[in-house]
Length: 120
Image (tube, rainbow, N blue to C red):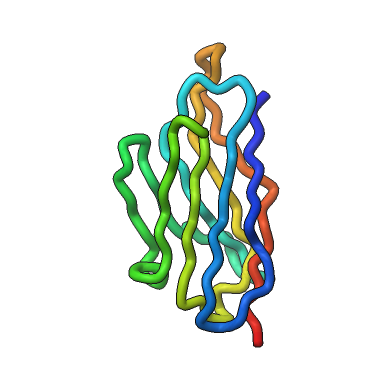
């Protein structure tokens, strides 16, 4: 059993910053790509950022320069540092990871999400 748990969401004013964390736990052998997605009310889920096991990153165009994804492999943790937040960044942010379990079965795992609200 593998679980992803996000934290760090909340209410922030426009122009502010937040740092999200996602910790993977359970029967993990290794973790491949780790991703942050977001879903706003009435909108489709969109990919925010990806980081590979070796630290290569990729961002959605609207997040480039404002968001930074990072990871600590020893802690099975991925972070999303968000700055210059805008009201349109309001969404549930979800962690996703490609995980090879200790039984050598590979799964794609999702967290429950953490709410980020950008409002004055």
